[in-house]
Image (tube, rainbow, N blue to C red; front, side, top):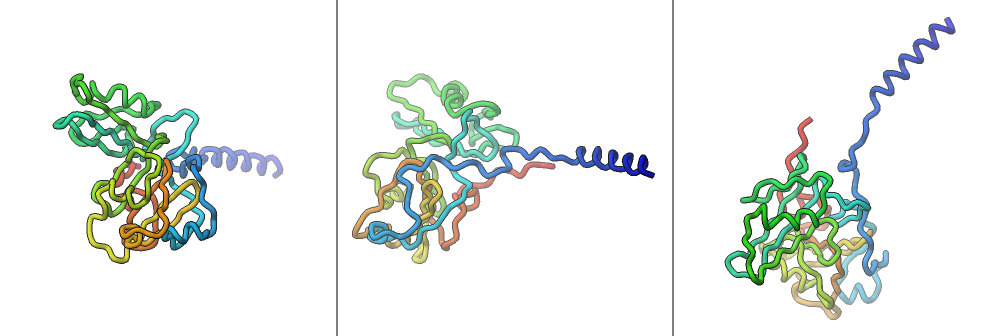
Length: 245
């Protein structure tokens, strides 16, 4: 009897090991970005003067993140701006899909598995068939960029924008073309590190006694309601196709 019980336990243990599932890294919320000018957890007089309505902890997912290897992966948002020469200027913005391909409209797919933003930037002119042109510049923004901010949601042109010293929240919204429609009750949510601060859109557009200064890697979203998540549905871009199982 004892031998039979041991045999049954061995079989159960073997079956259990067969059911172990390796959770893919892309299915876990990515680690947060380094905090730049971390916000407090309470509304200070300075934040209130800037029009802040609420501030709270934020646990991700983040548009920006850190990773020792810097590899792109499924769900990453990648943007390439071709600037400097009228007629050739264009923005390419798309997610890395479930096949580890980045394929913005009008371009062949770029393989991203075990590759970085810098790799995509180096091969972009050739793959996009952009001839060497004096004055033409190519800027690549993505999850590992540290010199830009992001604006999404109900704005006219969502995406990454280069950051500069002295940028206000009002100017950041203007850089994205402002709200795409009239939304008298809309809110502006800004995530910095593990903090989320909320403003009324009408206050941001009209200006407040004290400006709120935007920092690198800030994530800004304009929404009709007060609930905010930084995912494809809230950032104003179509979500990646679901993985087939």
